[in-house]
Every structure is written in C-alpha cells, then in structure tokens.
Length: 188
Image (cartoon, rainbow, N blue to C red):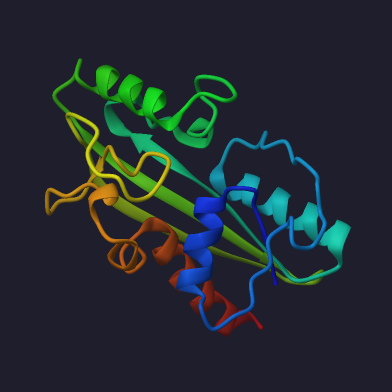
C-alpha cells in the first residue's frame, strides 16, 4: 500500500501505527509528483491525493491531510497549517507565530485533525481523528514534528514531550487510522 505523502514525519508515524502492513512511500515507488492541496477541507485534500496517486500507481493508496484548528483564530490555520506563512518556513517560526497570535486571547483551545482516505480504484473509505487540546504558552519538547511542540494535551504535556510510542497511541493520526480501519471493515 502506498502512503501518499512526502512528509517523513507522517510516513514514520503511519508505519509505526500500521506496523503489520507494508507501507511504501512515494519515493520508494518512484513517484515524484506534487499534488496541489487546494480543497477547503482536510478530507477534500486527502481524497484528491489518494485518487491522484492511485491514478499514477494503480496501487492501493492511503492519503492524509491534517492540521491544527485554533478556536480563538476561527479554526486557523486549518488546511493551511503546513504553508500558512509560505513555503520553506520552519516549524519553529510557524509555531512561535501561532503562540503570539493566541496570546492575544483568553481561549487557548485547539484541535489537531487528521483525515485519511483509502482508495483502491473502486472504493473510497475515509477515517477522521480529532484530538482536543490547547496551544501551549511556549514551544516545548523535542520529539515529533510540525505543531507537536505547541499542541498541549489536557494532561499538560505537548505532543513533542511524549515518546513516539506514547504519541502514536493517542494522536489525531492514530484516531484517524482507528476510524479508517472500522470503516474498511464495514465497507470492504
């Protein structure tokens, strides 16, 4: 099965969570295309990627789109989480920007959302994971990637302060995989 991403952090997480399945990266399959994520929802972007990669490969594909939705910022950055400040901007700069924006408000609540789409040429099956938490007052932790160092769980730890094993048992991506598996059992 191909996982339609060039994000090495997401690929590593998916492989660890789906450790009983052989998951191939785009690079391993010799696929070098960049799919424009221009849909208004995480699910729309994941669906687009799954279909496009299947068209190129002819192989079962799972695609992900995920991001951070901050309540006081009207769910910003949402589907633009990876690129809201432009291309090639470090996670650290993006995370510090978001902390500064959230500091203007009393509400620090946020959701980490992951939409997954499985496509085999016939069936489109989806899964979604939503992890509720808060935006931390400062960057904390050295594990993970993306917004992990600013996404604080109700326990007080950020995702980046958890071990990868612990994160992979509670994350939005893990919850989306659980939902996808349930939906695959119903639909395949």
